[in-house]
Amino acid sequence: MDSFDDRKRAAEGKFAHDANLKFRAEARRNKLVGLWAASKLGLKDDQANAYAKEVVAADFVEAGDADVVRKIAADFAAKGVKITDTEIRKELDNQLVVAVEQIAKEG
Image (cartoon, rainbow, N blue to C red; front, top):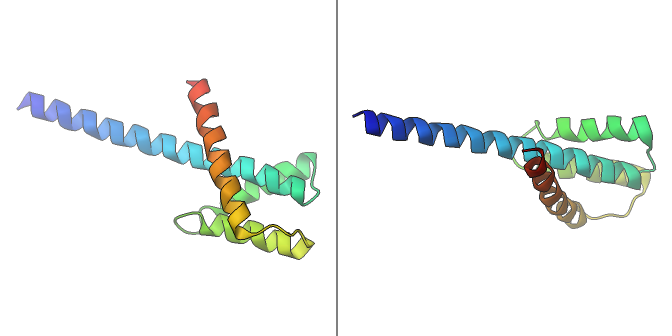
């Protein structure tokens, strides 16, 4: 019975670890996308960092990426930036790769 319990604990530990990595990667990705969007909006330095934090926070509105895309798209529309939802989603994908690489380097 101990062997089964050990395997169960190991599986639970791996699940928790994987979930934590996924959360960290998505949060990092959202920050990177926020900085990308900030540059398109003409924001710099502290304003860009504050905007990136807003993008990270926007991801907690609902599950999935729609809330992040919606926020950035609305901000782009308000400033007359002509970038489509598809382009925003592509940037999310691109920055996820970067975020995963950065986290992997951190160990």
